Image 1 (tube, rainbow, N blue to C red):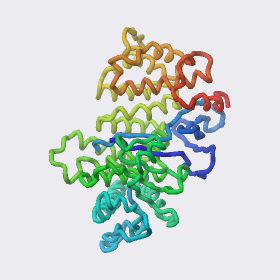
Image 2 (cartoon, helix red, strand yellow):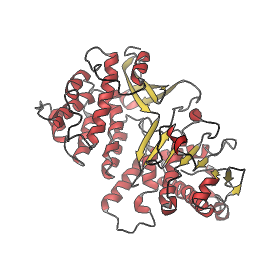
Image 3 (tube, rainbow, N blue to C red):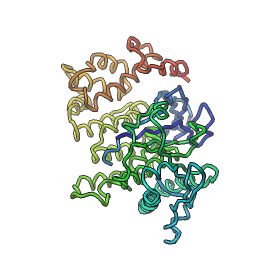
Length: 446
């Protein structure tokens, strides 16, 4: 099953601003990173300027892009109304999620969460009361137990969701296939999605909200419902995949891990315990930003431990394009590859050690293209990537296929702004011409 997350970044600025900015300070490498966000139809383009911390001079300009609708698998694998309620008495806590009639469409919990009546019809009033409460109680206790500066900040962020009584959190369960298809989502493969701010408000659905699939069989997976709700509320606070520290995944895996499911009828492997510990480290740690080497090492450990290395490249790719021209990110990728499919690690290690690689098949061509891409050597990367057969059995059905396509798209965009190599013979990877539109606003010099 997949979860789709709708977002348009606001990140501490007014949601209605068409052009938006975030600044990250990297004291460890004396840099300031400015990130400007602009929407082009179904995509968000990120214009990145990296400056010297002291002189303020621009050291590097690069870019990133994100689909407006992001997906993530949740096969194996949000609630804090008022921060002060951490010390609620038992009697008050028990009544936290009690549902009362609100209007023709919603029930309302004691602390203001609106629950669409269709959710009750698909489960039961008792089910929703119990599992909203357990998501809240267990999630808060988990973050509180971490006891870190970062976890306290997360609790505070979640608490902010519930302070505006005029815009309470809402849970929907009845969007039709037609309604959801207009957002690029199919309920056949989606479990839920959430709003990060009001940029995608409609007359019927106002931020903050979580929308669950009406086809979901939540009665049989209450632990999964609790974890999904916890995850989605992190998106309601503005967390988005790749562009912010990966709190939704890591905190869900930490606080609602499969090994903690009371209905789990099997012994827990040692590796599962290691994976949960790695998730908790990412969830509860403070980092300078999304290209902090400490964060990327921790995130790589997390993804290796939980066997989800396919989620690693989009995070490492940000460092490859924004960080120093070094081998750090490609070394982390190689480390993860050795722990999973182990098809390109040996090739990458040859290149990392300073030796040349004989390219004789699609995997070696792909590995060399990936290596050059990771170092910002885009012309050399393009030469290799263009030689790779995208229908190669070595790529088809593997995590490398998605990475190959990501690199191809990035090189296509760069070729629109850099005449040193040519990927322009390729068709625009996006049917709406997203890259061509973004390229008109992008500059390598300002």
